[in-house]
Image (cartoon, rainbow, N blue to C red; front, side):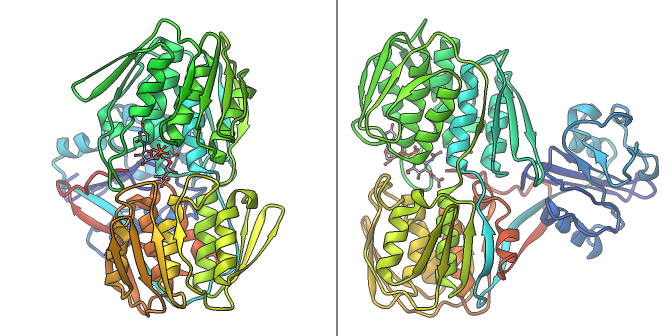
Length: 566
Ligand code: EPZ
């Protein structure tokens, strides 16, 4: 095994990829990874998961990692007829247990080989590297033309997965986006004892979650720190198990983001809450109904308490609720599970508690924020783009704003066509709770405002620190001044390519948009943020004419990328 290396990807895309390379016998382990349909040594890169594998291949070709063949393992367990690897041993590639399709090698996960690839490498004295597919290279100037499809809504899928905790029967969710936050939620639920099957590949986008045995109703700091929405398990866990222990999330790149309203609401429903060592613990024999008046509108707070109230004894009335479509979608699922909820999507929600919920099948709504990002991309690049598979009803505030700035759009049943023939005029914008202009589209709108005729004032009302992208846009030539919660954007400044840094999910999206119209080749670093919530964004944008590619970097094992937050 001498002369080989171990490559271990931090998590990018949908899982961990690890590979062995060594003289004579070489093998990759792709652990829980979305690898598309096919692959193989010297084969064309599979369309899905290809970006990641392309990085490995490029590394191999570039000679930095000599002689590594590529093999692909599909997620989903070993196929009938294939064998798992003997514990702790790597096999020569030609002895690998092939199935009927030579390009379909099946998932060999770390537990199956008994030891993780890293410890195997150490055992064999191999040097180890991390591969970070963490930069986008974008050459600006192309108008986006054609049709781009919207995936399922991340922010609807996350609470829906948490809702599965409320029943011991399987919950089947369709139209789940293949993004990293979903994978984090899978891990979160699995750590509690849930069985979570994620269907990868273009055709599937489905997850089946079975929470028959919840052995440990806890959400650890390790997971919560990478995804704040993990706090969504608090309500369902205490309702179902009578106890929940969830790490406090702490601040993040866009603001302080406390969860005091979740806690206050649960207390009102009868839970006893204690906080120590950075964890919040909620205990209740059975929650009871009550009247919850939110001091401030909170999306995940509404969702968390809505889930808790479904299993409470008696009626709960929730006032000043978030009216986001994702809340209504969650209520829709809960009602399919046997819940009795009325008014979701309005500011007053009534819940009649039931003693038990059952399994259900539900299709997640389209992602309105992803749709909005693409619509703005079409307008900004002067393209003619059909954003398909969205719900135009959820995009009212954006479409009105685009009308005001003179961007033409046309809605049909489930798509929005955007025609960027005319340069936009400047218009002020204020973020608000739904149905107002979404904070999650503020950064993308700012990219558009840099090219508008005149000065736009953008006011961020929801989060106190959500202008991190502004400084990066300035590095590309934008003229933006921040005054507290307001950003003054002087338009029609030509943008030029620069090396920029993504700071959170939507900030990354705005940098991608700016790069699409910048002169030259922009390099965006830390795009793991974008992978949290945009499914295969580079492939989608490439499909409508953008020049965008992901590049990887191979670093010695210890130089780990900073953990994502948000
Ligand atoms: C949800 O976050 C979304 N996340 C966010 O999406 C989105 O930006 C946000 O709503 C606003 O629309 C998910 O749905 C998973 P909030 P959430 O509670 O629920 C304050 C993205 O990019 N607040 O509605 O955490 C809070 O500080 C993201 O996909 C309290 O004071 O947001 C903020 O100022 C990031 N106490 C305001 O309310 C609380 O207990 C609204 O936050 C809770 C919230």
